[in-house]
Length: 349
Image 1 (cartoon, rainbow, N blue to C red):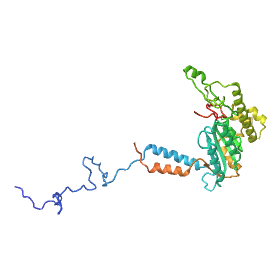
Image 2 (cartoon, rainbow, N blue to C red):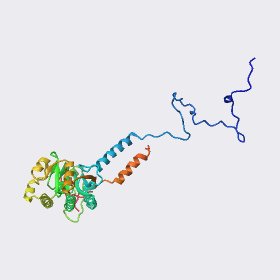
Image 3 (tube, rainbow, N blue to C red):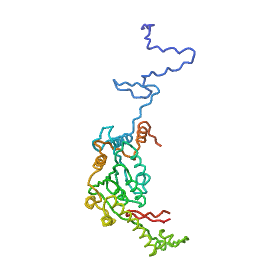
């Protein structure tokens, strides 16, 4: 019979229950792995802090968006030329006219363009402006108003043409100090159009009868429910000629050309940048960077930065903050006289 020692290893003894309350299982130590967990490899700490949650990684899409925004920030606050990295340098403001004149938002409307021009005029750091134009035209009245705002602008203003600078967009551009275009740009398209569609034969084919009650015989002339009379066609043609004459006169004044020379170019067709240079509709073949340099030169700047007059740095900062700190969750039309070739239908009121 083996003799048993009365002095047992203290580690093998079960600690007595605390006094004053029912006995319960002691809580796990911080270093203990939860039940069912795979034991860590040798040499790897498996410390689990009570109450802690695993970190959530930023989703890939957020990283991509942040990278794009960061690149845009660098481009916006960067310089076209000598002003890079110089916080004391003056600024060349950039205004984007990109879309249909008079209908698309931003600087494509008279109100939007005026707001950005006023912002540039009232900012002492902005010494000149570049209009970055990519538009095939739009509403005649909007283009006329916007051209006046550009002509009245007090600081040097230069145009950088992207793919297209035509019709109403060219009317606006013609009032600036200098126009750049690429050789393949579409420039000019000086002309005016009112287009009305006659649906009357289609209505007859479908058996649809339109009853018109109007205060005058020609009130429904633009509705397309009947053919135009000869008198109505002559009336609209007189409107087109009148508006186009104003277009030609404005271009002649802005480009310092004779009305006769501009009228010869007013075929309604666009020119390539190379042909536009030859016939005097632009001043030079060049890029956006060239336009920035020219604007700075006209303002007498040796170095400069670039600022987009349509951007808001506060909004950009808010967007960056939101991306950084938020968690992802599952969860009948009026007829418009236009200086372009696109059809517009409706009524004159």
